[in-house]
Length: 321
Image (cartoon, rainbow, N blue to C red; front, side):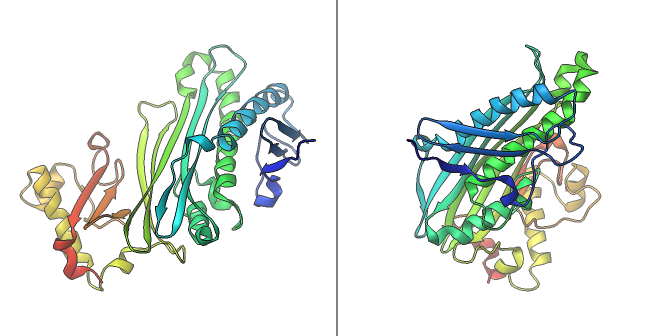
């Protein structure tokens, strides 16, 4: 007999429920377990919207199977690195679900790859990774403190696809001529930099497409103390009174890159238009530098894309603790 090992515990243990259709009472619960050559699924539909029940049941079986294989059968594709004394590993999920039974139905595609720490030393780091709002929508933020990164990844994918089927399917059935508007794609690739002792910069590169004219890309960074799991802010890096000198250095660097002679000139080019310049908390503690990452459309028009301002430690050392 094969011993079943849990890949994803019952969702009530996570402190949230997964929604499918428009339940009038309690929503479904999803359980699945994986062995080396056998996946066993139990899906308990308590109440589903009558018009979507058959389709949802059929499709959820398909995409949960794909998720289980991708999330739990991926060991051979991982690259292990180190952060301090902590071994780092990664988990990747890649899955697609069709919106309806139609052969040419719109689809949602998710590719999510996250780095995590292995061993007891990594508990504080992993807890922060799960709850740091690195990925939007922030499905992970509602999870309990003891959820692993693997479980958080599974939960994100299941919630994303559940919401896609629930929200988009009824609209598409009445608007099939605008098929492209119901396509959805989410990709996120996480990396880690370990340039300062005891600190990792955890970087999530995401791209989201929801059927509009263009996708939206973003890079979210959290600088995390390995021992405590604390997320470092600018106040943890710089001395009191750093704000104005740091803003001046950022403006100076942008002016140099954009061939602008002043802040006013820079604003006329679309940077910090209508707002005061600021140093973002979205920064990477690099090797001998700090990289300030402004996401798409944050301080400049969309066509400018993501903006990274790099300041060498030699320029800011008088401001650093």
